[in-house]
Image (tube, rainbow, N blue to C red; front, side):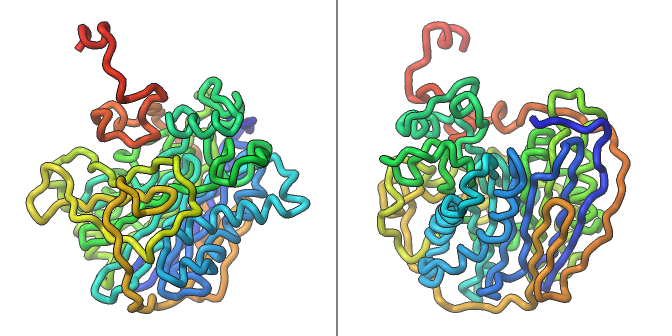
Length: 454
């Protein structure tokens, strides 16, 4: 938590864009913080690949420079990778994150920066004209991407915290330590762009440093049940749980509220009424909301969101959770396909697809799902739009489809402060993500006290 103002800056920078496949809204808010350190990018199509859409949120700390740099370069670096041209989008995202980080380290000005940034990105690619496309989510840090599938909540990313067992193992192996759930008693994230003071072990490659910019990547094939995906920084997730955010958005989509207005209302909901609430609701806030139209009208999506959830199910098991143990120098296949898996308890043939969480290296290990090449057939995304938000500026490129909404002054309102994420308490350990599990060995037998308590 940084220093705070006596009154919050409630002017929101908001924009929207869309085509026949996607309807997108985005907004950011400085709030109680002295400076705006967030950045975000939304593109209906990549500059060098009009057949792919890209969305990202970067939450800076210690300054805005790293977040700004990432917002301008990560998407371009992804599409420039040889792996991208070969259809291996997972590998392209992984390499691009590391290369952007290395580019900053090679810059005489940037390498001296004490700043860092999270990064959560969603690449939507349609290689097969018969499919609705596939989402690839790359993540470092604790910004999140969460998807709504027929009203159900599906996390696409998992927070990188030093208290996670595998993250702590890497930190210790690189010469660092975890104290008070912080890297070397300082940084609350175990992965980030920048933060080069934690990346000075010359005996370790980039992905094995105390803090690394190497991302986890999840793969999620799109279906007609996919309604929207929301990307946001921890200024949102510290106040509301995944499920609360999904419900908040879905109710408003059912009322035909525009995505960018929903983003504004979500930030207003999370903004603290004063700065004495321990940091909750006092952070910078950024939200990007991507609604899936798939050639249908916005009214059709609104009608889908108005339908009640037929049954409440547990979070699905993820496949091939990251091991963080192997080297990203391994050879990966041309692409990945989704394993035939559905959420336990759902009707046959109607289950929610389980996202494939890609290990940070060779995808052919015993923990990964079967792989197969991705088709080279491409369906063109109509239109092209790109914008990047940070600080006081909005940048747009080569598109008349981007509609910029004038900054809107919104009075701060009382935000309920719910510190706990209901996911962790409602699910058994075996269904929890690595970031939610305690640092202790989860395979060790329960103590006598624990058995008697049970």
